[in-house]
Amino acid sequence: MPNPLHIVVCAGIVPDPLQTLEPITTPTGPGLKNEMVLPAVLDPWAASALYEAASIASKNPGGKVWLVSLGPKAKLQQVMMTIAQKVSFELVPIDGPIGGFPDAHATAAALAETIAALPGLDREHLLLFGGWESAARGAGVTLQLVGERLGISDQFQGVDQITLREDGSFEVLERVEGGRHQVSICLGAPAVLGWATGNLPEPRNNPQVGMANMRTIMPALQKAKPTTLPANGLHYISVSLPKQQRTTRVVKDLSPDEIAVELVEWIGAE
Amino acid sequence: METILVLTHADDTGASLTKASLETVTAGIELASQLDAPLTIGIVAVDAAAAAKTLASTRARLFAVSGEPFSQPRYATDAAACEALCRAAGATIILAPGSSRFARVAAGVANRLGGVIDTHITSLQADENNRTKALEVTRWFYRQRVEAGLTREARPWFLLLDAGTHPAFASPSAPVQIEQVAVQLPPLRTSVIGLRTPGMDAQPGAPGDQPSSRGWQTIRPDAKLLFVAGAGWTKKQPDGQAHAPEAGELILGFVQAAGASLGSSKSLVDQGSEGNSVLPFLTHLNQIGQTGATPRHAKGLSTCCHGEEPHVVGWRFIADRRAISLDPNCGWTRGKADVVYVADAFQVMAKVNELIQPVKA
Image 1 (tube, rainbow over the protein chains, first blue to last red):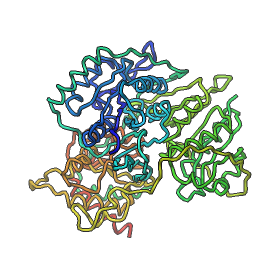
Image 2: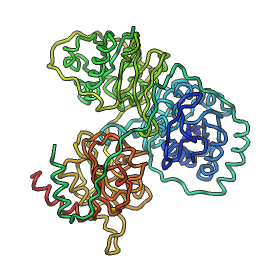
Image 3: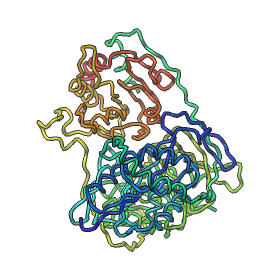
Image 4: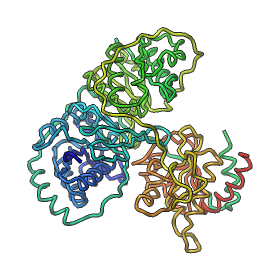
């Protein structure tokens, strides 16, 4: 690898997927009921990006991983207590609102401004990582917007794998329609990679990594820059839960053969 | 007054528009009618003249970006092409299919034009109570768990439509006049070298290779039926043993015979990535739910899956749902499926395969 890679991972925090979500109206727009007390996790696809970034950095000496995360300081601290034990990174927190309803363009502007100002970041060797979609807004646009604002014109979304080469170029697999991967070769950084699941399992908790990370995470959280996200003319007309609740027929008294007959009829019916 | 541009792109042939593009054309025609707005269609294709022939009856103004550089879905070229089309059309509302090709670039193009973007749009509506006929759109948040209607003041407003929300535009081919738009391409640093299907590279005799999985695709977006395999397939059975190879044969046998698309729960796919070669033909691309896909099929059959919320959110657009589970209190029984069979999926699917294969033959 001719030059060490600087990997910046953009990752938000989202409610734990097992929590019940109830939308409400707040003075600043739509939100979730008890949003600040719902258990939160690092956004799942962005977490994949973080684990892949850490794996790449560990195999390429001199590389560094920053984790840029926008959310309320208290929630970021809660999530970092877990994430910090998994892989090494430098946290760059931005103290801002939580949730999927703030405007993606305002979020991207705040992230891009923060990344552009990172001390020691070599933008010629920048790989900008993140999830291809969040589990909150789920729009898949924030990372692209950040990349454009940073002037990066090689972008990949739905990434499941990159293979770095000795000359600095890399092969990248992106998800496309029909359960296939598009295979591309990029000459090298800078590039944007919006990750899907990747190939790595969630790393096990490592208390030593956690202690090393927390030495820098706590001061960074204390110094986190407060940010407000303008609506940019975005107006929500309605926010609601889907009303679909099915009347389930639970079949307990049929033999496997009888169920099979019923299923085959159902499959064949128009 | 609004002006509408529909961005479209060609399929692998380079000379025909994709189905998702034609669905967006339908949406554009409907919206133009609702808003009394002029309609322009932009085409990105190697041979745009051929691709445009099916659009003759739209009577829309047709702009095109053509040539070999646009044969490959790639950020630098596609963003430049879409930017040029948008500037040529000068539209205030830009509709595009939420395909992987345009989802990769649309936000970047919106940023270049000083516009805004919303994606995964499921409906478009002109507000009839408003004299200016403002546009309102609907999309989902929190992975299909919260639905919202929204509008924006900023223009241009890019809207990426989810596939399957509109019928594909269909019309006899006829010669049309297209206006070619020149594109200034940046230096290209990325080359697309092809497509790869996970699991298709398995070598005969390699660990986990199963004859029935070789040479065909298990993910079929156009299939009528989604078949989902849960982690229960690899758990110990009443004889105290796991029967993963038999499970694999039953699952693949059914998917192949029924022409179904194969989905999976996260827990089952994760077993593979954690080094347990249980059902090796499953990859994360098969995963349905919170961190997987949200496909659109008419029917869905879940097997050996608990039906927990993070998985079920991926079933939002599956209309007719059935499940086979040994647990009479699983998530599916709580209003998430239409029918739940409390039974052993091994026994049921073995019989289903016996019955369904003669039907297909």
